[in-house]
Image (cartoon, rainbow over all chains, first blue to last red; front, side, top):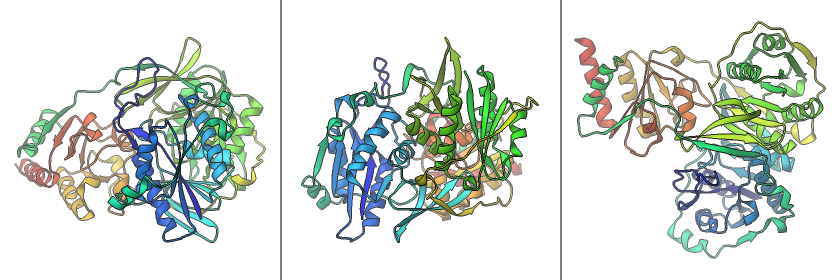
Length: 257
Length: 320
């Protein structure tokens, strides 16, 4: 079985939005989106010892994202395809999902996995857009996943309890971060990762028309970045052994006890 | 500008957040219409009229029985193209996030998510979105129609206008790939014991507790305070505590007088379920935990040290 894992490289500490471009400041150390490591882990679990199984990482981002994507190779993924193109900068959901779908069409995997959300944009929407573009069934928020007899079955949590949903392969599945504990790459894995295939493709190679990429392919925009939302005063203290007493004092002061 | 609101329903009830968004849509100017999609849902249309819809589209089909996203995308896609709505709004849930995102791809329509407000400014629609763990507000917009938006849980309260809506049945035509995912089982748990939604004081435990056995610390403190015990999604999914106690995006939304978060990092999914609490106290060993950004009092330290002491102090005070 071939499994594609869609992964995003995010700045380790995204603490500001550039007032000029109104885009997220991505100058921080690039790292594999932590939620995507759950998807990588699940792909590796499904692959098991299967010699004919393959786990391929598919990502959209600048070329320097490759370094961070290698973490997934070190965990055990087989190769990386990075869609990298200056024309893709500033892509919103419409433009990104289009480019990602074109890259996934090229891979023709039986299963496409996503993590629960991107921890830079808090977006939790990409999988459904990609599934629609690929015209494949979708199961999201999956906390337990099984694959058998050409079908995928996922148990997931909703506002009302648990659902169990089944879909035939090929399918798109987004996993929750409760599904597993991602492994840490071993030293051997880290050493071996550099030798694994890492391909960079341009939008042109995927047949993505320039007008469908980047800002011209996007349908949303940012007008302004404002200050923090109004919030009462917060205070933080270090526990020096008197933390419990200080909580009681605080609660008495707020008449909350 | 005509707005369409997708109304989610569960066990014969339109959901409160959906109705809240409908009320907001009615205030934006223009007509606010609603779509109800399901099986045997015609009776819900009148309810939508009472909460501000001037027109209610009803897609009633056995294929829409299970709350799965893809058939709903087909219905919405057709309806929006036929009626030409300028704006389509969703109250964010597990179901609607998938519906809105897939619809964005289907129509190449812009989607802004996690909005906490919407306003007409200089003739254009502007959405307010908190970002970077809610440390900034971003004004977002759309470059073309239809404009799609997901509104954060608990943002708008429903407004009962007592109106009456025209009801129109919608033709349901589904794509092949939209109907192959099937609902095998729905286990919708009933809550047991005192409901956390009604509790005056809540003590909530997260993954920082280290293991299910340590929930005893949380239970003892809740007992001393006369409050209820809640849990985060992470520990519920891990099987440490029952689903009925879960606070957050996919759990319950609570607003007690006092909320004490023990070993909870406080990701946005949790925050939306408890941010309306009157006083929030957090105990966590990680000084960078997001919960410290919005806790009225945050204590950085070992919960195993602090919580038993706190329980004892509260007991003494209550006994006195």
